Image (cartoon, rainbow, N blue to C red; front, side, top):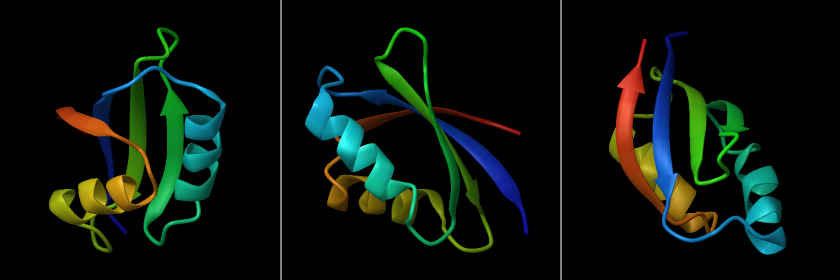
Length: 75
């Protein structure tokens, strides 16, 4: 397992439906953790890079109804 963190900027404000989508996205195979930034305009996704590559992760988030723009990666 290779854990990687990827930060995303939300393309729309965080609201109740988007919160539900984040909860649903947590169950996507390979995603280990989703953390909302204190500013509520970014999320950090910790995922298993042996299960998902960045384009697959972004596509999975979009399918889950989470409008994101890639920001940067961290260790």
